[in-house]
Length: 531
Image 1 (cartoon, rainbow, N blue to C red):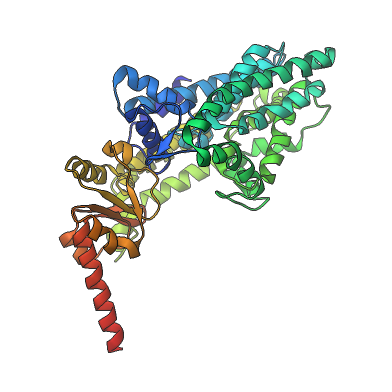
Image 2: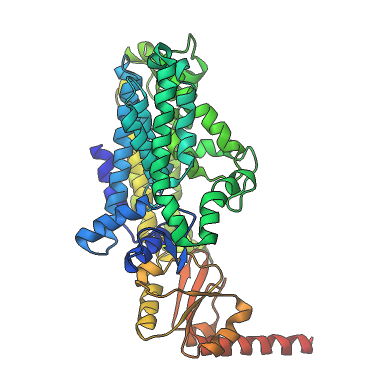
C-alpha cells in the first residue's frame, strides 16, 4: 500500500486534469456546485443523464471544506483507488481464509497492472464502482452481513447505475455452489439477499425518482431507459463487436501475461475446484460473458472484475507453491525484463533519432531530452526483475512494473502533456466570459472548459458552416475550433493557437474568424475557377 500510494500521489500531481474524462467530470461537478443544483447533474446547462451523482457529491464534500480546487478531486481519486486495493486484499483474505499465502499474492498481482493504475489517475467513476463491488462481495462472503451488502450495493448504484447489480448478482445467485452459508440455509440466503438487493436499489430510487421529476421528461426518459436498455440492446455509445473484449484482456493483465510462470501455473492447474476458486469463477466468468453480450463496450468497464481475475491467478500460482518454495529456477521473468530493456532502448535512441533525422514525429521532438533518464530507470528495473531470490520474484515484478509505469507517466507529463493541457484556452475563455462575451465551440462540446475556466454560462455548440451566422449574431463573441493544422492567418489573427492531441486548438474573436473563413472560401473559389 505504501508503494502504491507513493506512486499514485506522485503520478496524479504531475499534470493538470486530462481531457476529456477528468475535465468532463470536473465540469459537471462544477456546474452542480456553481448553481447549487445537487440533485440533478448538469453538463453545459442541460441535465446530464449519463451519470449518477455519488462521485460528484464526494467532490462537493471536499469543496465544502476547502473551497473549489482541483487538488481535492485528485486526492479523492487516490483515496478511492487505495480503498479498492485494500478492499480487494480483504476480499482475498475472506475468500482464501484457509490459504493466507494465496490471499497475500492478490494485492501484489493487482498493483502491477499498468492499465488500472493509469486509468485510476483519471477522475472517473469506474474505480469508485470497483470499490463498491469489492465491498459488497466482502459482505457476501464468509458469514453474510446483509446490511453492509445492501449499503455497498446502494453506493455502487449511486456510483455507476444498474451495472452494479450485474457485478454482484451472479455470486449471489450461485451462492450454494461456493458458499457454506448458502448451502446451509438456501431460503435465508436468497430471502435476505433479495431483500438486501431491493434495499440497495431503493437507495438509488430515493435519488432517481425526485431527480427524474426535477430534470424534466427528456431527462427522466433517458435516465430510466436509455442508460440501461439503450446500452444493452443497441448502444448509442461505445458500440463494439461481440468478441471485442477478448484481445483487450491482454492489455488488462499486463505484465502477467508475459510471465512464463503464470502460463505454467495455469497449464498445470489440476485437481478439484474448491469453494474459494468457485467464488471467483461464479463472479468473473458469467459477468464477463454478459459484458461481451452488451452492445456498449469499453476496456475500463472490466476494472471491477480484476480482483476476481487476480484471485484465480493467485490460486493457480498457489498450487505451484510447494515447487517454488524450494527456490526454483532464476531468470524466469526474462520476457518482462526484456520488455523493460527494449522500451528503455527505444527511449535511449530518441536523441540520436532527433539529431540525425531530417524530420521526426512531434512526440520525438517533445520527449527526446527526458527519455534517456527514463531509459536508465527501465534498464535498472530490468535488473531488479532478473536478480534476487526466485521466491520473491512476483513481488519484484510487481514493484518494478509499478515503478516503470510511474516513470512512463512522468515522461508523458513532462514531455507530452502540453498536447492535452487546456488551461491556456481556459484562461482566455475565463477573461471572455468576465467581459460578457458569448462563447461558442465548433463541434461536440464535452464541458472540457467549464471547470478550468470556472464558466458560469453554457457554451454554444456550432458547426463550421455556422460560424458566419453565429458571428453576425454575436459580434463580440469568442469561438473555439479544432483544425488539423493552423495556417499563417490563425497565427496572426487568432487570440490563441496551441496543440491539442494530434490537432490544434484556435480561439478567435468571432468576426475575425468569420472574415478569415470568407477569405479562405474566396481563395478556394478563385483557385477552382483558375483550374
